Image (cartoon, rainbow, N blue to C red):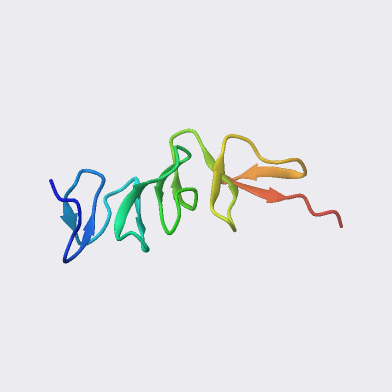
Amino acid sequence: ECIDCENGILTLEGICQSECPPGQFKDIKMNKCEKCSSECLTCYEEKSKCTFCANGLFFIDIQNQICGEKCPTSFFKFSETCHKWEIQ
């Protein structure tokens, strides 16, 4: 089991690879993989910046890539994403 990698990045499993496996993201400063938050199936750059949401969740804030189970006030769910109501 590795504790650091000369080439590549260290996964949570202690293996050196070229990229993090699904469910983990690359911590650039530490050159190792960290676990995504439980809301994310996959993420990047930080643990709560989801690329795909976990089962049963959807994007409640697509711009910031945040997943949840219900839309915030004044938003509605359409096509697995929350959209803001716009009053004309």
